[in-house]
Amino acid sequence: MSLSGNFVGVLWDFWLIWEAFKGAADIYDHEVSINAQSYLPVDDTSIPTGEIRAVENTPFDLRSQVPVGARLKEVPGLGFDHNFCLCSPRDDWRERHAARVFHPSSGRVLEVSTSQPGVQFYTSNVLDGSIRGKGGMMYGKHSAFCLETQNWPDAVNQDSFPDCLLRPGEEYHHVTRFTFTTV
Image 1 (cartoon, rainbow, N blue to C red):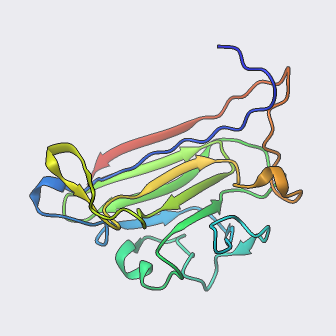
Image 2 (image 1 turned 135 degrees about the vertical axis):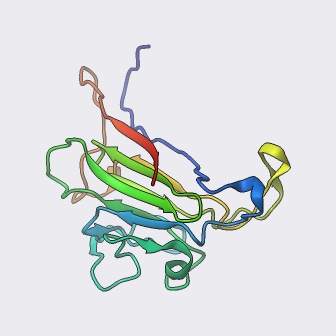
C-alpha cells in the first residue's frame, strides 16, 4: 500500500480479560500498572491541554499495580481517558514495557510493550449497555478497557509533544506487542 501526504497512526483495542460469561460485568477488580512518569491532562472536551504533568501523588500514578475500581473513584470526570507518556518528547522511540493488567480471579495477565511514545488508557466511560457483544453480553460503563498505543494526542498542535507527522519519503514503523499469560 502506498500513502502520500502526512499520516498519523493509532491502534484502538478493547480488552476484557475477565470471564465475561460467568457473571462479571465490569473491570473494577482488574489491577493495572502503566510505566509512565507523566500524563496529559485534558480539557472538558477530552483534548490535551498541552501540559505534561507528573503522575506522582495523583490518581494517575499507575506505576505500581492498583485496582481499577478503587482508582476510578479518584479520577475526575467519568473515568480514565488519558494519554500516559512512556518517554520524554525527544527520547528515541524504542520498544519498552508500557502496561500490565491482571485479573486476580482468573489469573489472566495482559502485558503491553510498544515503540510508541504514549498509551491511552480508556475505561469505557460512555458505554451505556445498549451495545450487545459476544454471547449477548451487554456492554455497560466500565465493562472493558483500552490500552491504545500511540503518539501523544493533539501533537500536531503542540510544539512540546513528540513529532507526529509522517512526511513524504519517510518510513513509518512501530511495534506493539500484546502478551497474554496466566499466573
